[in-house]
Amino acid sequence: MWICAHWCMYLSSGGQKIFAHKKANLTVLFITATLILCISSVQAQTTKVYLLAGQSNMVGWTSLNADLPQELQVPQVDVQIYSQGNWDDLGPGFGRTISYFGPEVTLGRDLASAQPDENIVLIKYAVGGTDLANDWRPPDSNGQGAGPYYMIFM
Image (tube, rainbow, N blue to C red; front, side, top):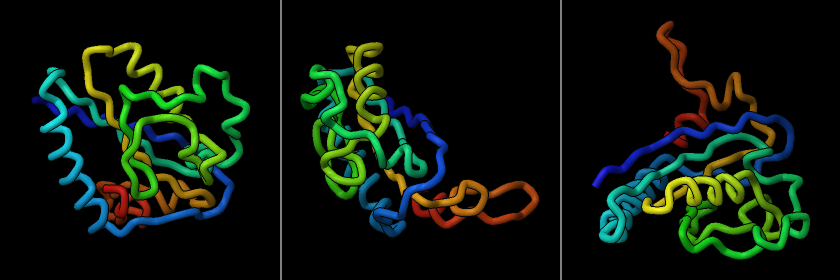
């Protein structure tokens, strides 16, 4: 089985901090996800894991579920999502509250349509009101360390 991790960083600004996970919790999450994916990938050749990280737009700060077309308001059983400590079928309700959604709804729909024989898994970690230059900064070759949310997510 191949597990492909793809980065989908959605960059935005504004909003408020809504949740944070400790690095240890994410380590346990990735180990659990790997075991689940190994078991669930018997039918498909590949499981593709997409990591979704960012600020308020990724959180789903302003997009109401009620504004979605009817076909996007139902759970999508062919895409799994881990967000805010829970695994579930993809659908609206993974925003700042269950009444909101982020870009994962249409991204997951498009990925599943483009890759019908693959298992698609999204792992979402987003914190509104954070700063890209400091909070999400990856480490660089000049020795500047990574930002705190980058470290938590990794």
